Length: 219
Image (cartoon, rainbow, N blue to C red; front, side, top):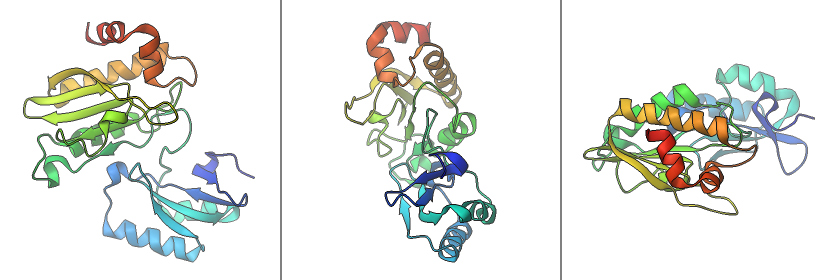
């Protein structure tokens, strides 16, 4: 029996089948890949295809002996859905598709995905990018969030869901894409170096204080 995360698989409630989650950056995929998902899922008798809250598509109810073949036929890598790492990055359509977008959320999120998807950290770490203040990507409950405004990006920190939910706090605003990526790098590195194992970013911030964290990032 596989452990959760082995071969990108997660054991299901029945105790015998698995779900896998191909990496679909930002939830944007082609008709060709959708057809492949459907064809491969049908071929191997998957029980369901489930769109997840992180804009991934999980193939649910696969037999263990079929998992290698499914990955090979999909030609995809696993999405970061479990473990102490940066999970799949969530993003709204932004200025690419949405008339309300103020900043290019897909563009910034693509760069973040290239840099950080699956990056190992002391605990799970979630990132979201919203192209306007409507915050459709729910940056407000992510460890690291970006909200697009007319004057650039606002970065928010320390949000999370779970049993002890926390709303994110604004750190800095008016950033270009390049500036936002530099601040993101500082946040990720500081968290990696200072967080205790299993602690979300909000716990680190509460332990040392928001002002000390802000000073460390923006100095």
